[in-house]
Length: 576
Ligand code: ATP
Ligand code: MG
Image 1: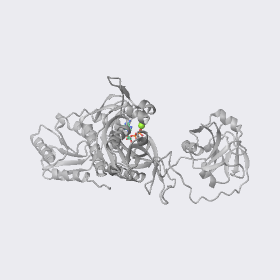
Image 2: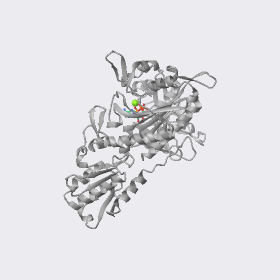
Image 3: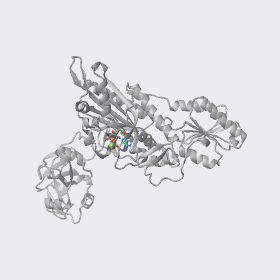
Image 4: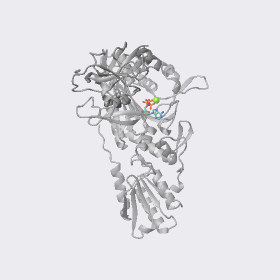
């Protein structure tokens, strides 16, 4: 491709509405343009990366035994009414009517359509297992479309649906997809974690989210430094190994702590570490109960875990007024001693003795407090937020590392949710009708490319890895008016194309400074610069965009050398 005849509308300025780097760079490199909020056109340069992503997905899905199909964007309402989601899906589902006044929606996902296909085409267990996938445009009327392709309203997704006769088979289908996803994101050169989204529900439905690690990610996750365990911070399990039983040695002692409200204040005042203070949170629940929650001073409450422990929909910090009524003291002095509330303590507290707590009176705390002796605890449970350094719940050796993540893929064991609602059955070996056991598996194509940019850029521009970069090699003609330069660059361009290398030739009549700036911005992984100075010695310059090393290479060797580098960078090593 010749730059002079290509559509590459690069921007010097960052568009005002682009908050994250991938959105900024996709706009600045001319990969995408906005048509409406969350609705984008893929310009030629962007489409090349999108298509590469799709191709990697396709190859790995095929390798895993899934079969490609393509379902309609326009979904008839009847199917969605059968599953019950026509009512339940809410405003993300874009509904419309055709000229006959029949209801339709734009497919935001395709469980209904695919289940309908299978129930009408598959009748015997002998035809199973089956996994159908498509790479297709979805529409979800997101409340807050943002970050470019990261959270669009119209976006390309790969969605796959597996059908098995039995639960065990469905688990195998799930495992195959799990491994295919690992292969896909590895091939893209991404740093990612497969995060347990619904931990440990054995035999039931379970799911993993694939998270690309990036500062701009919406999710906080932890992963083990040693094994494959990873989880959303909200769900990460905590373990307390070798917890020594707490033994009280100190007397309970009431002390004055004038004006010391926060844990840090109190710890400083008493010359202790915050971890030696126990904080008491007054929490109100959806069941209209007020409870006291104890946590080590330096820990954060995980209100989702707490709500699960209490068996309620939500459990949130109580209003000041409720705290005052419950403790008889202003906010900042709550404590468990003498408190007339149920006390839930974080599991960690069980191993603590002789700690500091609030005194339920202004400017008062207790030293030497001990659970059991000085106040009752109704239950000890895992209710705190996981942090980096916490021991792994699955292996003995590892500890948590913490990250932010972008969810690029999701594998989900659905069970019989849709087959039951839509009566999708096959006959088993005994001629008996059995509901199909399903799984569904999604990957956001545009979101993954965006996430790859989040992980691969510098202050000068994009640095997409070879498998996703729009072109593999950029040949820059430093002075197109110099006949020798022109001839050498054209020759390299032609030879590389002959070798099947994807090459962009910067043949524009622009100053070198502009060409170099654009080259950094669009970030094609390998860059050959042809200029009069090196050419005089029979050489050209070879540079990698990431890392920036520069080599002077004889003109005669350049194309074979570059071809080899491309082949190496694309070498596929996958597991099945
Ligand atoms: P999120 O929590 O980010 O809204 P989701 O749980 O709704 O995601 P799924 O229904 O599991 O997402 O969709 C499968 C994949 O499709 C996601 O992992 C993500 O990569 C992608 N995806 C979902 N919503 C969007 C969107 N609005 N824009 C771009 N990609 C999306
Ligand atoms: Mg969503």
